[in-house]
Image (cartoon, rainbow, N blue to C red; front, top):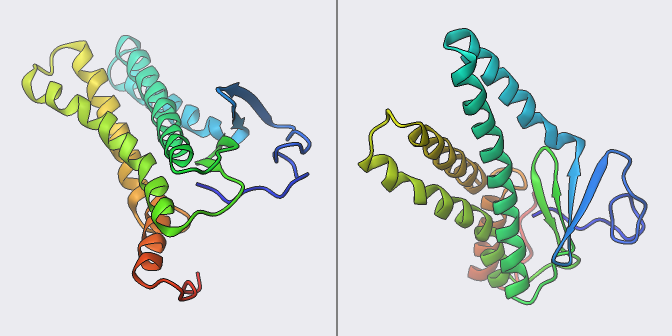
Length: 193
C-alpha cells in the first residue's frame, strides 16, 4: 500500500489527471494504469522471443501470453485484496495504482492491528490463488497444455506473494513488521526508516 497523494496533486482524487495514466472505475474504486505498468509486457516479449528461438512460435506465444495475463491478474488480485480488507476494517480505499509496483491509496493511516490485516491481505490473496494450482500440478501429467498454464499461474502468484512479504523498502512485509512492532510496544515512536 502506498502513501496517499496530497489533495490537488496529479493523480490525487479531485486533482489533475496524470498525462500517462489510464483510469478505470470499478465499484467506486479508481484503478489507474501508469506507464510503468508496461514493463511486464517487455519481460514477456523477451520470454516469447527466447522460447521462439529455442522451440517454436507455437509454444512461445501461449506461454508468453500466460505469463503476461498471470502477472497482471496477480497484481490486480493482490491490490484488490488490500482494498477489500481495508474497507472491511473500516478504512477507505480511494484508488488502486498499477505502475512498476501496485499500490492502494488510502486517505488516512490505520491503527496497528488493522494495518497488519491490510498489509497481509495482498500477499494472502496471492498465496491463496497460487495454492489453488499446486494440487492440480501434483496429480496431473506435465504433458497437458493446461498443466503449463496452471503452473505459470501458481508460480507467478506465489512469487508476487513472497516478494511482497520480504520486509524491504515499502513492501507489505515491511508494513506488517512495523504494525507488529507498534502492537508490541504501544505508545513508542516508530524507529527511523
